[in-house]
Amino acid sequence: MEYIDIHSERNFNEFEELYAKLEKREIPDGTTVTVTGCIHRIREMSDFAFVILRTARRLFQCVYEPSKTDFELAAIKEGDYVRLNGVLIVEERSKIGYDFSIRSCEIITSPRFEIPFVLNKAKLDLGLDMKLDYRPLSLRNPSERAVFKISAAIQAGFRKFFAENDFTEIVPPKIVSAGAEGGADMFSVDYFGQNAFLNQSPQTYKQMMVGVFEKVFVMGPVFRAEKSHTNRHITEFQGIDIEMGYINSFEDIMLTEARALRCVFDYVTENCAPELALLNVKLPTFDTIPRVRFSEAKEMVAKQYKREFRSEFDLEPEEEKLIGDLFKKKYGSELVFVTHYPTKKRPFYTMDDPEDPNYTCSFDLLLNGSEITTGGQRIHDYDMQIAKMNRLGMDTSLFESYLMIHKYGIPPHGGLGIGLERFTMKLLKLDNIRLATLFPRDVERLIP
Ligand code: ATP
Image (cartoon, rainbow, N blue to C red):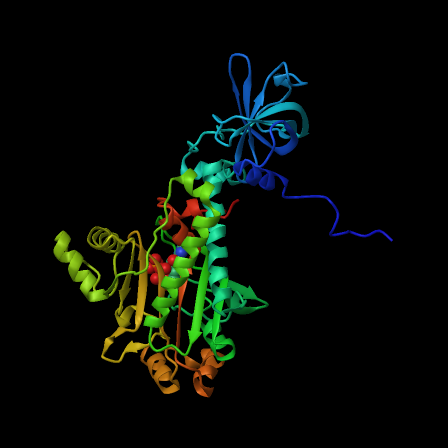
């Protein structure tokens, strides 16, 4: 019988292991090694050349010298996928402490056509549409790629926090019969002749699961048929949602988010040093996050920046930006919780503030002047929930399974939703959410 043997010697992680050893200067001078990657750039000097190899997350400089190498430089070109055999020579002037002197080369794959733009610049010099049209190629640029290595680490950081804090991951359906957030921004699906929708949020499902697991999280796609053309909205985004029971108030949710973010920032800082350095980003370190009531925040910016604001019940993007500026200036914080949003603007499941029902037990978290999270306490009392739905003119019969939790009992609970791409965009100070989305979907874009 033939077997796939997990103890076989094939190593899929060779380059990163070698690189870690090089960083620690653990490889003896004169060691012969083979490295695999794509030729990112060839820089010809007078009597030698630098061949820069692009590996999964590094640019590795190799030295081509005609007297030491058994092939002509003309035999290789940028874009070739190669296996280079060579010798590591200790060289203190080199960034990594060694020179890699090439001896021979095996070309694994050579491109049939040339990429139609210059890929190997430090910053890709392309307009947004070109970057997105050529996504499989533009993402090979190390700076473009770094954004997604960080975004993957953000998700891993959240998962670490959730695992350490006994949250259970759940996978609710994406094809649903009704929306959770209201409004018309839902994609319809013809579901065997029945009208269905793509989920706008996992809200009702994660609440249902509080009665089962107490603390749950969801990481999965969320769909919004928003016709807006802004730099911070897309029609499909990755939602990071939590819901937890036995809370004393929505303050417990803010505290949980603050702790989760601290864990995420520490995780990303620890695991993405090369990418953060490449993008020249330093993540916020904090033990506290300032908080301000919605109405106070509005007044503060109106006074400080002498502005008239149009919307009474929500924050305009410009206001969020000014709140961000103000709190950065006054308290040195890139993060600020804005609490007690008006009832008018919050969905049916939101708990009203017992002290003033015009406001809610809810919050948004702003990062660098833009909302990245909405959260709050939910209604757990049956009569209160039915009364609110009736007040809003909702058809409660569409929510029978959801209302089981209120009918048959659920502890006080609350939660929040974060959009991964919006979060990554604000954290890395990108000027468009599409740059933090692998294959963005918006009103115009369905390809690639
Ligand atoms: P906004 O006011 O920015 O349109 P929202 O109030 O509709 O957002 P929520 O429904 O509260 O957003 O969603 C929670 C989080 O999900 C937001 O804070 C944001 O990070 C993210 N998010 C919401 N809508 C979008 C979208 N269209 N594209 C990308 N991310 C989004």
